[in-house]
Length: 378
Image 1 (cartoon, one colour):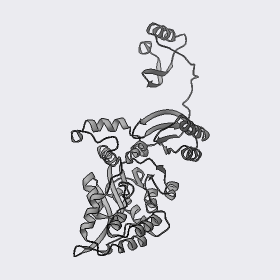
Image 2 (cartoon, one colour; image 1 turned 120 degrees about the horizontal axis):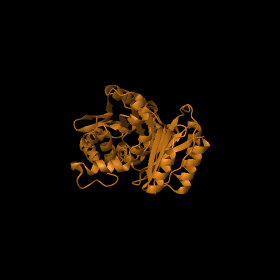
Image 3 (cartoon, helix red, strand yellow; image 1 turned 90 degrees about the vertical axis):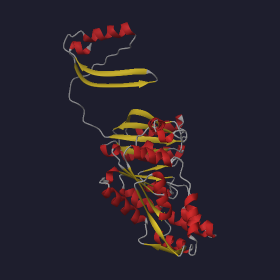
Image 4 (cartoon, helix red, strand yellow; image 1 turned 90 degrees about the horizontal axis):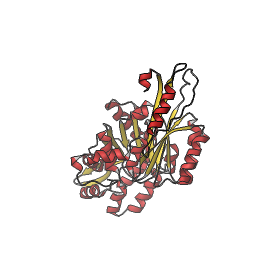
């Protein structure tokens, strides 16, 4: 009808919610044109509700910044969502659109926000996050946000649930003292390289078979396979960098089909660990350097990289990446990272990248290699 009337179409939006369609058109009509009367009659005939609003002709308003606020939780109550939306309003942001990203294994929503002050929104959202135990991330809506191409992860307590050095220590009877050193190093209380040498030194004389057994014992974080598999489908390069050991990271890289794996190498002589390391230690600064090196090798700008970690030795890497994510992290890391995820599922990070759970499940369902399914957190 509008085409036959020859009206000018300036803008159009449509949304369908629970099978109810709302269509908005901004059109220009001539003086004395009867097209609006015809549209009303058309709606009456077909049971459509048609409303008009007169908009003065003029130039487009200047563009305002757009942000994406992602909210993730085991459950999202009305109270939690009230706190989130109130925090956005407190930062002078206006919610343009809300999309549900997942129902399981966690609930997540994406709020597209127009205008506002990002720092003020973050500050208010941190209060809401703490009060209701939900994760909230604020990202500038931009080409860089939608064009991430490289993910680099820490390993111990990130990709896997364990600390490998502690598994080794348990196998040789010095678990408690090594665990204490590890905790202090990850909290930033000890120099990582010195603490690593001290812990490795306690493993001197351990048969290499113990190292092989420990490699088989490590437990992937729930959602790790889904996370890596989905990223690879989307064309991401996926890498791990660890202050742990190549004996474990090489196995993980092979199992998961990772593109890069970098870690420390334990010295082995005559089938036993010497208690020393070979080559340069992968420490806090080293992890950031590995991120830069891999990004350069893959020809990917740092703005299009994501880094994920949990300990103080991950901080430089998180700062260097386009998006640094603290995953079930120590307080010092949560405070300095771009955003934090505290739910125990690694694939929840997909929602920060705007990927919907339904899209992941549809891709898995059509993959012949996954016949039988991997569950919601495979």
